[in-house]
Amino acid sequence: MINQHLWATDRSYFRSLFGSQIMMKLTPNPTAKLTGMLMLASACIFNPSYAEELASPAEFNDSNELILPLDYREWVQVGANVSPNELNNGKAPFNEMRTIYMDRGAFQHWKKTGEFRTGTLLLKEVMGVERYKGLTGSGYAAGEVVAVAGMLKDPVKFADEPGNWGFFRYAKLENSDLFQKTSKQLPTDKCSGCHTSGAQDDMVFTQHYPVLTDSKGTGRVAVPVE
Ligand code: HEC
Image (tube, rainbow, N blue to C red; front, side, top):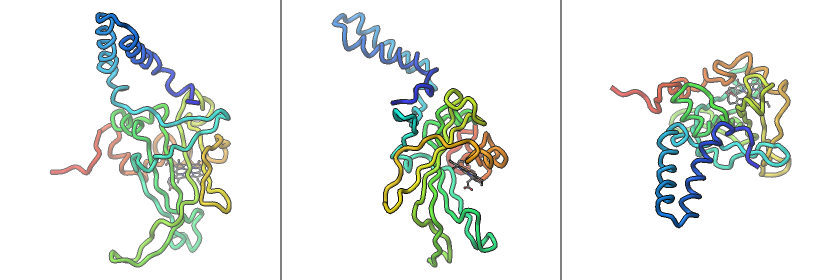
């Protein structure tokens, strides 16, 4: 089941889009066909924000659990962090390496407006930390993936949550190579505390994601050149 709330405001657009397609398909009348085609074209031209922005990948199942989108490594990678034991007196609170992904439509919106749109989905792939000696020197490399954590913005579904973010987590199943496919919304006190107190922009740690601070409302998607 697709989340009912995410695209509430977009429905009229899709109705006109699908309405015009149906009109083109069903009617033998050439004038009506032409009208359908014009409606379809205008739905795209006069709603440029919809035409340009990809839809949110967030989907819930019948038990209201968020389904993990299975193409997230093809999204925009906005950050990569590591907090190794060696930099934390031998024991980091979370000895992890993390890669953070943002869904493409949300990134398109962010670079244009500087805001996290309704339906923004951020996923954090959490990995172990490995040490290696390589041609570039000694370093840290990603170990095994242990979980995928997520946050989804929806002012209707999460009306009572700080920042209207819902938090989710897909853990690796015990004695298995597989991960949870769906996640219930986690209790606010489990996740949002650090995000409310420590994150720079709308509960997201953009201070660690130069890709986001650089593109915020600027449209920039590469280093500036001379
Ligand atoms: C101890 C503080 C803390 C708690 C508790 C916490 N987080 Fe985070 N979270 C962070 C920090 C710091 C980052 C920035 C990246 C990094 O350093 O890992 C982050 C990043 C994230 C991100 C990437 C987007 C962003 O906001 O930067 C997601 C998604 C996320 N956390 C989900 C969760 C979920 C789900 C929970 C609850 C299970 C949770 N977090 C609990 C501190 C916390």
